Length: 361
Ligand SMILES: *Cc1c(COP(=O)(O)O)cnc(C)c1O
Image (cartoon, rainbow, N blue to C red):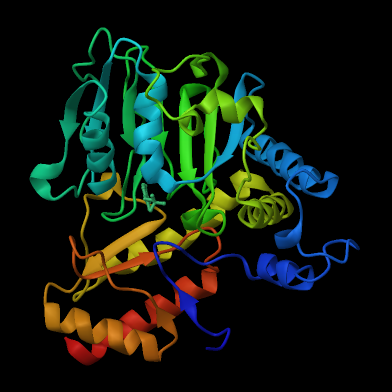
């Protein structure tokens, strides 16, 4: 495969080419150590500098206040579906807004640990929109309100955060993390799997407000699932995903060099506009979600004809545009245009869609 391929995978997804080049250059000899980061003790000074540098850069990028901890964990977003209720339930009550498969999975998992309410959902229209969350029936004793902020599969994103009426907000940001600036103070806990927008699979980033860390969890709760253990040990209670953290650290530096998250957002909006403008005027392709709920990271679309969709995906591949197949629950196509997707990739996709439309309408 040549470098000419544009990869629209939803995750694991495209990484900045510059980052991969640095990783390649440093692969056998990390900054004069004559060792690869993969071969180093996680207790070494060198690796400690990588972790602390990564945390520092992430704090700067997101403007994370001092009363929040940054953790690098494992187990994917799926383990967060368990860790969140295990750590955050005190009254045993939480409210979930179910806007897609990932939120639904989180909701079902949480039900093992407490009295979990589904306070809103968009399942009636196959999760093609974000419900109005301005005045929901928030439980008076809810320990937290849970959302999946960008729904990777359906291509929706909250246009505004829900009104939690003072309750702690927990957000799965896996597929929009670092795509734009966010006000961290509005959240109690943010988590994001690296493989969508920040690094390789195997790293889970958690940003948690300190008052949510607890010394004592129920006796049955595994020590490894206690946020406070990881916070007290600077994410090195056990061996962390060293290589993955290193790649994330390079991506954070890449974002800083680019001009930070305001600049990243500007570029992402530009990319999304090119694609959505085309979809809104196309005779063949249609976007599959409500306009007001559109994601700027994941863009699903379809022709309405399964055979034509299949043909599109096949021919796109020959054109150097890969991984455009939609999720099996939605069908059609999905273009994930994460941070690392160059604007040229989106332009080339639209160029191909125009060509395909001419040939098939
Ligand atoms: C991909 C994804 C998940 C699942 O992540 P795993 O690492 O496979 O557990 C959860 N939530 C969102 C928003 C995702 O995009």
